[in-house]
Image 1: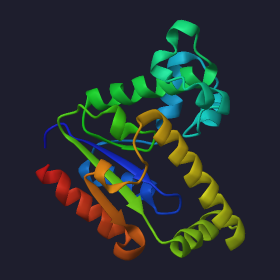
Image 2: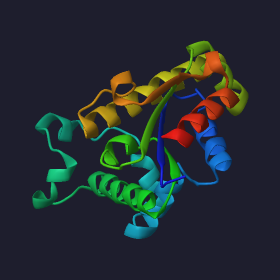
Image 3: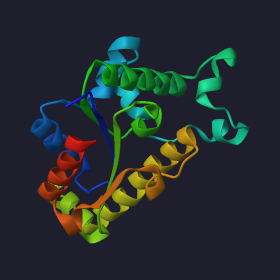
Image 4: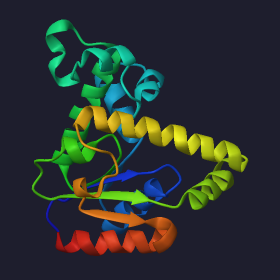
Length: 199
C-alpha cells in the first residue's frame, strides 16, 4: 500500500476515535489523536495542558470579530492560541510526510488537502446512541451526556469552520460519511479499510 493518510472527523460519542485506532491497527500504520498535542507541545515548549486547552476549540471572540486568519497573523505577533494551532498544523504535516497514518480531528483533512493519497472520513451517529456511549464510558447521566455532546460538537464545528472556511460534517468535504449507530463500529472499520486498500 502506498503512503495513505486517513483523516477522521467525528461527532462526540460516535466512536470515531475507536474506529480510527482500530483501523490504524488493522492497517499497521501510525495513529494520531491526542498524540498530536503531545508532539506539538514538545516542539514548541508550550505547556501540554495549555495545548490541550486550545485543542479543537474556537478561537477567541475578539479574533472572530476582527476576522484574523491565524495563517496571516504573523506580522502582528501570534497569540498563544494561534501558536498552538499553527504548531498543530506543522505537526500534522510532519506526521503525514513520515508515512501512512490515521489522524483524528484537528481539521487534518483540510490541512492535508494537497496530499495525493488522502482519504477523508466523517463519522456520525444518532444522538441516543451517542448519549448511551458517553454514559457507559464516563459513568454520567443521560442529561449530562447530551449537554456534553452538544457543547463539544459546537466547539468542534466552530473550530473547523473558522480554520477551513468549510462546514464541519457537510458530506461534500469528505470522501466517506458513515453512521456508526446504523452500521456498527467494527463494520465502519472494515468499510474504511476496504476503501483504503483501493484508494
